[in-house]
Image 1 (tube, rainbow over the protein chains, first blue to last red):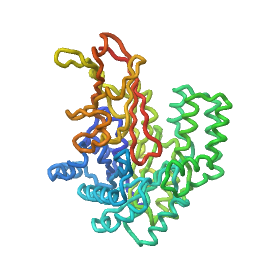
Image 2: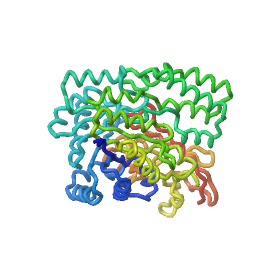
Image 3: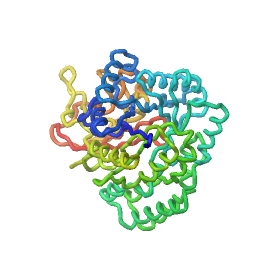
Image 4: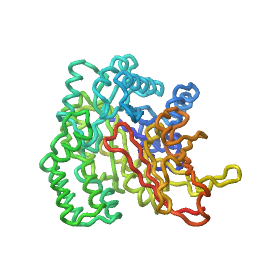
Length: 350
Length: 130
């Protein structure tokens, strides 16, 4: 029997929340209906006047009462280290460490065993927060989101830190967007809606297929994320692809499709097995699950098989992101998408 | 089936003070997925019927407090965030406001979440009537 557990990130329900169709309790209720046992929260998304309510005992009592009512376990708290909260400067390392400690404490107050931090978090800030993380018993997980990947120069920088400090309170949270066999169909549909040409779409799809078969050139470690990202794109043939799109008479929709194709990537699922001792949680990112429970871009069965083979006993947390491509021209049904994705995960796990 | 609404359809109106129309107002939601401090809403651009409104004539209101765009750069209070899914009210100071009848707005939300290598520039367009 596999020990892999299922969770839902409430990020998934953002369109219903935005429209006022679901509130925080509604999201928890929908999560429970899918059969997931874990819940992931973006406090800044669904807790108004962040962070004040979390400091309030009455609010926390209500939170825990809801978790009990819906039989849910907190899986991961998604923190946003707002280190450029002021436009004229980056917060100092000390200020950022204090912000990270605040987030660790807030996560602890709501019962979360882990926070998700973003790739923009400086190494010094992570290191400076480790002792406090250990004191609280709350881990810091770094999201590994396309264009980043495991088994890369970028990831090595963090492994060096883990090995040097011996910490058990820092690890990776792979985002399944790094396991996209193809560009999500919902992005292609949007491009068509906006007037993209079939010829240009084919150029972009073929270039993606070539990157998958050749293997993506990995991104390097650099705190200047814009620079690292641009180098990565160029190393993966962005210029040639853009020129081909231009030559074919590409319009804005074609260029949008071409540029967006670099926000997806393909890594070998073996990367999960190689790095399992450092993996603390997983964002099961998805874009569109069909009626027969097949995700149209992410290689869910292969990735879940790798987690099982590696003996993973943590959560796979559904994170629906297809809505961003639909909402510009049509309705989004996150509730149905999450339901299907949870079923897709369940089938792969059991 | 249509795009997700951004503007409050009932939020467009002229604003009166001391019996004089001093400008007009609209309400819209941030095109991002979480609530943010006003300090990272680094710019707004408003164009109505093809005319750009001067930045210094814009006022931004959340939770009953009103700020200029320059003032917003230092607003980090938890009670005055642009909450996810909630309307902020923008007042455009313009003597006489807008004429009764149909108009078109094109507003840009420029938001800079710290982790993003590229900022969000959300173009928000709609027709409306005063």
